[in-house]
Length: 213
Image 1 (spheres, helix red, strand yellow):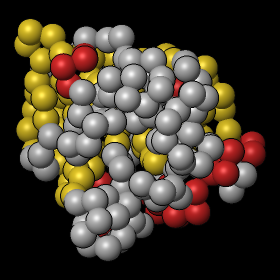
Image 2 (cartoon, one colour; image 1 turned 180 degrees about the horizontal axis):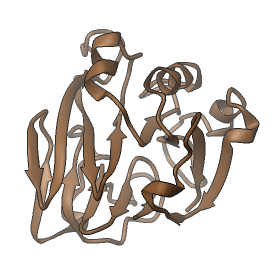
Image 3 (cartoon, helix red, strand yellow; image 1 turned 180 degrees about the vertical axis):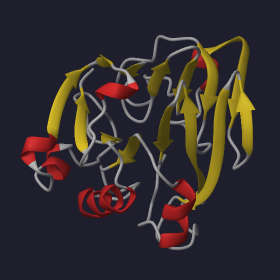
């Protein structure tokens, strides 16, 4: 199993097939575009920095962007409705949280989550091995709420995303504002990509994996 970060909220999860989350075109954000072809694309919402499916699509790519329950290319996917803001969606609309299972590992991508998670949503998400969580504030939850979300879901691994990167045109917070709220001993810097097996994941507590481009 491999996870590679393409910046912002775009991750390439590779195993028996390749799943790509929230692809962007790069230039609209001031960062490099993703260079990967996906078997399955998960798009949490239709904003410009998350919906560039054409950049990573192949001839037979499956694109999922609604809160459905389905199996595509052997990937079990469940979409869970959520909101892009804390005002009932009145500011930025709706998003879809995607929980998906690939080769025995359970992932959850929170997209541009704009609010804390209630107990009902946490129950729907259920046990998670790897949680992708936005931390940059302004357009998503910020560091403090992101920390409570991680604590409530209790994944084996939490991966911060949607934070300020060098060259980025979005005025959002850097990842350091989230990391200072975390147990410093739990932080693991994995580089641009990491290869792992289910057995490599921590048995207790939550590790924070920090990717770099």
